[in-house]
Image (cartoon, rainbow, N blue to C red):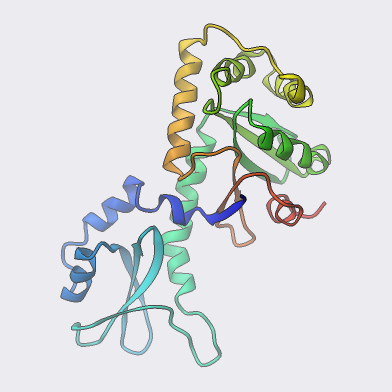
Length: 256
């Protein structure tokens, strides 16, 4: 099953930056403290109309807006709408929650061990956690060819070894190759026949890289491959697990 999730639904309560912001909130009004006691992580404050004070929070890994009444005695949770039907909660939550988390997660992906697939000048970058033995990773690799070959997208394969006993050896062979991108291309083209020959033993440095990639994958809320991370039209980080449908491919990769 393909499951599309916002990155916010996976990692907001797990990253130190968010938790430190919440930990500093020792002088919140009583209703906000009461919400914290119920498990809501309060991230920060924002201006709100109607004499209310706005707070950005998280509960069960979902962002939410909280509004404190003028007397400071009650808190209201929900979306504020103006007379024209505009969502007044969206922009504050994007500023306080979505953008900081997108920036942090994107930097973590940039710093991971990955193999580039496509032109370094491609205007769009997409990260995908890839196990060498994953058939759905191979499907995504094949489905992405029109965008990659046209120079529109660079896929960055964050290599992990989680599926089979030979995954670590094959992952090591790809990362240890003189030209990892060429090795990955050959492997994916020959995937049905087993692909690259596993490297044994796995060098310690590469084992550490694979372990770090797997840890990052878990931190970002995934345990399956492929897991794809991309920025939507608003610049927010999105996540999709599994091989994308044709419709989702266009959302992830852009127009052909």
